[in-house]
Length: 214
Image (tube, rainbow, N blue to C red; front, top):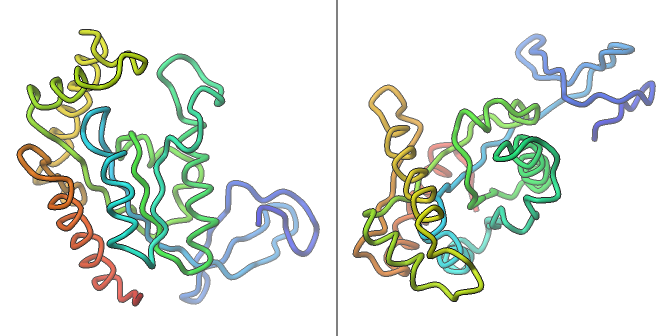
């Protein structure tokens, strides 16, 4: 909750402080300390044609005790900011994810955002870690998927395809030896079921590493 339990003032974004090995959200107005628990988040990123929408229901079936949701459930055009700057949308994704995670349920989001875009959000410090997986595929495969979509989706235009493939190329640059927290999953040549099985295994492995049981 973003309202101080002691004085009723607004405490967003949280001002987190470690005091005697315990983490607290400290009210900037009255100094009231409220115990705070950070939780991990699983983020699966991909541009159009990478497989997010196809994989979402399959991951829900394989991860029944996780909350899996697609970022497009929140309409991107409803958020303010200059063209192509969706920082307020990213922050809203994180806010919803944290509210869910506060119920001790692992949260897996499928959405289009880069690690540095999430790190710039005021809600980022609510999470102990964001485990980031990038969905990628061969450029010709991604382009073919986009051209095969129904005409109403307007995804066959060369400009749209170039933008989508450009984000995929950007994801590949994020998965560098000096950025070990970014993993990649290549959907080229894999069935959706096979991809879902591998991604679910990735989520479960990190749950075990975080000593979370479900």
